[in-house]
Length: 280
Image (cartoon, one colour):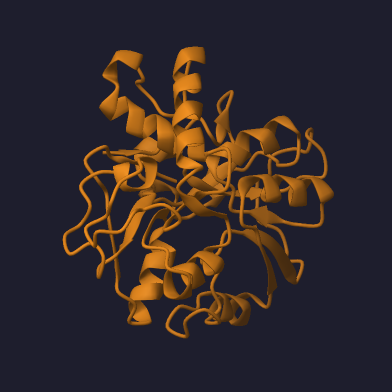
């Protein structure tokens, strides 16, 4: 089970003011487009030559694209508050902050040719649709996977407990100092997802909506995890290096890191354990 509520990535258009009228037609191009994006979202072949969708867009449109990579939702919000960007691939834990702060404008979905092909469950999702107005277009979605070293785990781990609970791993060594966790408030949802499975008495129905007791239980779990974690990661490329060179063998991660490491011939794989996983 993947819990997507509130974390689907969006493309949001910046507005000059909250009262700016909705566009009714696409005007002449301005010649440049400045984007705040997650790593891997706006590729021009620099990460991997096989993945380049910016170059053809620039050639076809005459519009020069510049990308500022952000590593956390908080960083995205801060950059958008500074101004100077046209688009942001904001996850759900940032999009509503941007909407409430008047940093993004309503979009006209009739001007998006492929709107009808978007999964209907995402078209009016509450993390980009407010009072019937759309402020973003669902762009990507995926799971927060459990990435692991296949030389340590001969079989895929069946539980997130390998990163939440102190234990010896299949190679006979402790997981202390060999696991990681994401560096951001949204990691509370990972803990809540784990507790939803293992402590049903808490009554958690969504990892993104917790009452006081549920929130306290999630924080207690995360405090215990702190003794195990070697690094709280937020830079995808630093996590890649940690798996290659720093002895990290298990962590919550994204398919982006998994795919790059596997392409590099590293002994990694990913799984979604029995507790399920939050998504974006």
